[in-house]
Every structure is written in C-alpha cells, then in structure tokens.
Length: 499
Image (tube, rainbow, N blue to C red; front, side, top):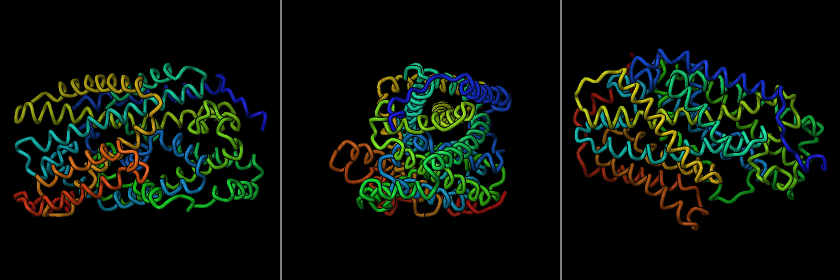
C-alpha cells in the first residue's frame, strides 16, 4: 500500500476537459431556460407546473442528497462499514411513501389555490390573513437555507481542492460563481433540467466506480473476505452501532417531507397522476446511489486501512481520491462532475426556495397584498435576491469551511422538524389549526437548535428525531384547543380531485 501513501491529484488535461464540458453544458442549459423562466414567478420557481416524470423523479432525489451522499456518506461507510447503510434506508423509505401519498395531495392543492411556495401552502390551507404564519415560515426557511447553501459551496470548494490541486478558497469561489449563473438566469427549469442530467452523472459514477474498485481488489469474494475480517468483524456487521445511533440514522428520512426544495418538485409535475411512476424511478435511483456510495466507501477502506493515508486525513476525500486511482482521466472528469452534480443540484434548488420566500411571500404577499405587480419585474427582483443570498451564503462558507456536513445535517433537521410534521398534519388531519401549525413550526426549529447545542443530547441521538416528534405532538395538542379553519372540508376535497 506504500504507493498510495502520498496520493496527490494533479490536473490532467483529459479529466479537466471532461469536467469543463460538463460545466459548459450546465451553463448552456441556463441560457436555454432563461426565456421561459422570465415569464413569471410560477415559471421561475416551479417551472409553470409543466415538469415531466423523469425530471421530477431525478431532480427530487438528487436535490435531497447533496454532497452528503458522495463525500459524507462514502466517508461514513469508510469509517463505519456496512452499518452506515441505515442512514440511506431511512430517507429511501420515507421518500417512497412521499411520492405515492404526500406528493399528489400537495400538488393538487397547490394548483387549485395557486401556491408556488411552502409559505403559500400554509397560508392558503389555514386562511392566514394576518400574515403571522407566513412570516414564521419565511424566517425559518431563510435561517436554515442560508446554512444549507453555504454547506454546498464549502463542499464544492473541498471537491475542487481535492480534485484539481487548487486551494479550497479558490474552489469555493468557483463553485459559487457557477451555481449563481445558471440559477439566476434559468430559474427552476434550468435547475430541474440540470438536476436530471446531474442525476444521471451520479448514477453512472456510483455504478462504475465501486465495480472497478472491487475488481481491483480481486473481485466480490476477495472484497467480502477482506471486509468481513476488518475491524474484528464489526466493519461488515450492520448492527455494530448503538440503539440511539440506529434510530438517528433511520430518522434522517424524517427531513424529506419538510425540506421545501424537495416539496417544490412535487408541485412542479405536469400530471399528478404520474407520481406513482415517479415513485418507482425515484426509489430505484435512491437505492442504486446509496449502494454505490456504500460499496465505494467500504472498498476504499481496504485500500486505505488508516485514514492518515487520505489527503488531509479526511474520509470525505475518499471518493475523488480513489476515483483518480482507478479511472481513465476522462471518466475521472465525469466522477468529479458527479460530485459537483450532487452539490449543485441541492444548492440551486435551495437558492430558489429561499428567493421565493423573499419575493413571493414577503414582497408580493406581505408587503404588497392584493396589488397587481408586474411578473417580469418580480422575476428580475428574484434574480437580485438570488445574488444577495449567494453573497450571504458565500460569507458564511468562508467562516465555516470545516463544518460542511454538520451544517447539512443541522439545516436538514431544522427544516424537516419545522415543516415535516406540520405539513403532513395539514394534508391529512382536518383538525389541524393555524395556531397549532405555528406552534409546531417554532417547536421543531427551536428543538433542533437547542438539542444540537447540548453535547449530551447531541451524542445520544440526531436532533431531527426528537424535534420532529415534539413538533408533531405540540401541533396536535394546540390544535385540539383552537378553532379549525372554515371550509376545511372543501379544501380536503381538492387533495384527492383530479385536474
């Protein structure tokens, strides 16, 4: 293993050429989508509800995975072995049911009541004429989304630094500029189209790379024997972790129904009747990506028994490092593109969600209620807000370059706990009230923040699980003692009606 002790990834012209070709394609898509996205807010933020099955399936999946899958999850598999699979199992199962049951209801409701954002949905569902519920929702979205986007920028900087031998700061700036361009210009259509292409990149990379690595180890049987004997057998033991960790890993999936950039995909599909097909495609994609990342991390441990052998002694650098060792430079360029696909597919979606909260919910609905506003001017304002949010996220990225995956899990938990239980109850329980939802949103977000700041609690369990359950309980209890919204029965009819 001595030849691997000083892996330094140099810039190869073929690898860089393949990666540059990918970036050019992304930029051209942004230019192509610009005209469509400039027609109005619905086009800019949810693609005019005209997205197809494949686009919705892949963009929903990859926008939810972010750089956490390729860098963080492979690093977990490198460190923990097969027990890391529980983290992927949680979100795969939850998103399967969301596609089947949650997505059709919110899609139909959002079309009937002209909702293009999560605050829109809550405001219409609970007749929020005072604006209190909308304000609370917007503040929570912006608070956690800036942290989330910042984490993606930092991940891009790390990937550039590990792949092309530049500084992490330079990589951070390059990532930011690329994402800024096509998101600001092309809006949701550009984001969804690029997410689809990026999802295909990720699928190919996560199938090809682990197969080649395992073959280089001597084949599946040789890999199994090495992995089973590693770490006193615990490396291949799915239950080699405590109960709290197991529940926390499975609980990662609870964030999916509360993350607005995933929910926006459900709102965007042209035909809600096709969401069952979306569920099949999306679930298969989740399974293939998770298994590929798991096997890559585990096989990588056979090459690097000690984390000190990896660049920066960081398990999150495993994926680009091992790809450089086993792939032709052109394919390595594709793998690096897959890393940026994971990063960009999440960051661009989150930027749109945060910008929509400012423009649609604050500027149009709260500051200018009932006034006719030019759609083109609103789109222009949206683009400026995207620029502002990018600047704030970049600033946070400079301040927190070592906290990328802590930020991801923290933001995922905050959004999931605030909007997951409340949106599920809003869609399925007629007794849910506006005060109950406000109390639930605040409880979920506050619990995540408090739980995360107390070391004993943070070590016991991932904060999303207790925060989600507590928000669910508070929403139900407060709703029991407050008045439900008029015309609730009429609203519930829209959940199941076809177009």
